[in-house]
Length: 101
Image (cartoon, rainbow, N blue to C red; front, side, top):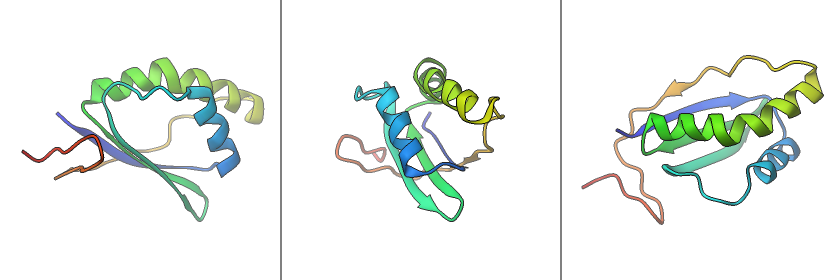
């Protein structure tokens, strides 16, 4: 089942670029869409994945190994995950995916 959510992070585009570079160019298994855009206090992410398991594997295996050391360096600790708002996706149409039958 598709898993989609949004959350806000208090970072700037330079930190985001460091995270993306650390994750690398290989497309994560199960990723349908990832959007990051500026908001008043940082960035907002919108994520659409084939399944929650795909997201959790990416988060554990690729995202946290990059982000946690950066947070430890910048803040001296790793804060809790930001709250996520789950999205009830009706359709996701990208160059590679369409969820509608």
